[in-house]
Length: 344
Length: 281
Ligand SMILES: Nc1ncnc2c1ncn2[C@@H]1O[C@H](COP(=O)(O)OP(=O)(O)OP(=O)(O)O)[C@@H](O)[C@H]1O
Ligand SMILES: [Mg+2]
Image (tube, rainbow over all chains, first blue to last red; front, side, top):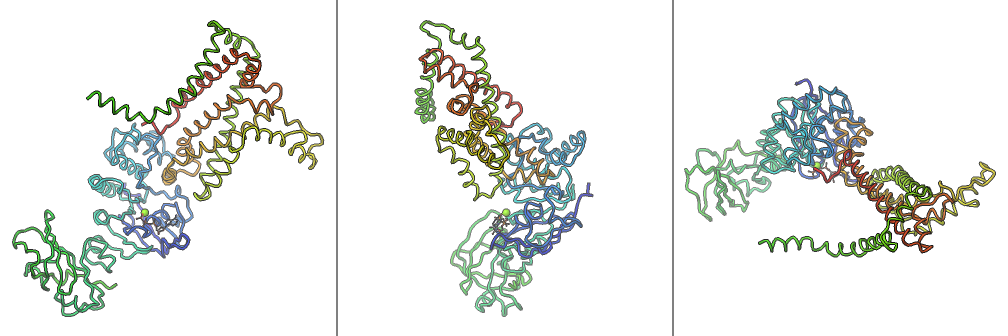
């Protein structure tokens, strides 16, 4: 079932709406079978990129390739992609079976084959036996499963999802994430997933393209994006972090450094990399405790540096050290390698 | 407990009461009067109905009324649906103007619009003058006082209602559905036929029904622009009233009302088997 996969390439794609530049010389190479996520704040151009790939919108300049084929001028129905929408977009006048059968009918697949393939796909999304129902008689999670089944039933080489899970509550979302991962493994399709939920992006993706203002700010694996953000924007967007400005000498010494790393404008210190234990840190400094809060598995501390900079620290509740009191001055440290120098 | 539940139910339906009272006073009561008028002449008798259904003059007009109404409603559908489709396809900021243009004629009285058709279709009317001037014809054609002129005027008068009904049904359709159909591999026409059309048919049928109902009661238009044979049931009712034959006029009014209701119920029944309605699950 793995023959259906194709690389996708955005080549210098720009799209403007009047004076608004939604995509700005956007370049992205997606490998065949890769699960890539476009992540970014609202208005960063994620939907625009996906619409251009799906054929709902045309680039002002540049070209899009699916496989070896330039598809920029093709209508959506000729691109052979599957798509899952945020609003489900199930056909309300058709049964679940007919919804899932629709792409096969449009491709001229023979009747008996349609029945077999639809039933197999409904089974894959755990909706066997729901074929005769109308979408209105399904729960939100079941509807999105039908939408998923409809998107993959014709085994398109590329699968697009725009905020496909954000209409669902947290528990369902996690369930569907599992489902999507499994479908991706089974079909081996190239997936372009759009979200502004970083947790979802980190969980699902092979690589994440972090976008801002119509451009990719960083393209990396979830781990690399988390551990080695290239800029303040990325460090701030992925996970929680402390940004320590390096252009001000007072903060440099306040976090225990004798000089700023070369060319760094700031330092990213993840809250969970800060520790009170001396044998897990090689750089140490003093800070005042401003607040202590329990968060189940961790304790969250709000600290203040001698230079006045606030810091957040997240400590596993091992119980080895007694909790500091508010207003107390404690010694905190981190491993030099865990601090990321940001160059922009 | 039961008392408070009843009170709650009453409270929920309370806002409906003025509307129901209005319907009762303005519709149910007059219809009851008409009914009484039709069957007591002065004792109880079905003589009026008997007369209506046994004389071919009346039956001919009766069938003609049904036929004209159904035809006018269908013509309005065939013209109005594509018009609504066109407006929905326009960019959002241009739509209000187009709708406004469709609705403008509704602000003029039917009488004025019917006279306007006399100006257009008359022997010395705009159409004949233009055709004579260009030399396409050398004798003025008879356009007025024909069955054709009745259809033209009725369609023109009722069309805006169809356009607006279809339009509002079409704006209810999630544009994402058509996009979804397209990515699923449907070319534009297939996406229209398999998704958009079925979802808008309910609205189109409502438009058809409204226009059918209105047409069944038309009498000014056929009287002014129709020929001698273009008589609708409405005209006969008016005539009978003018001759103070209240009983027979009332009987015909009842026939008109019942036929309309029965026919629409039949149409609904048939449609329910084939049409998707957003209300069903
Ligand atoms: N049809 C349009 N007309 C005008 N401007 C548009 C249109 N579509 C998008 N834009 C603009 O293009 C920019 C990018 O929009 P896009 O929808 O791609 O963002 P997004 O990353 O998907 O955001 P979100 O997370 O809110 O969905 C925004 O500034 C938006 O206002
Ligand atoms: Mg979007």
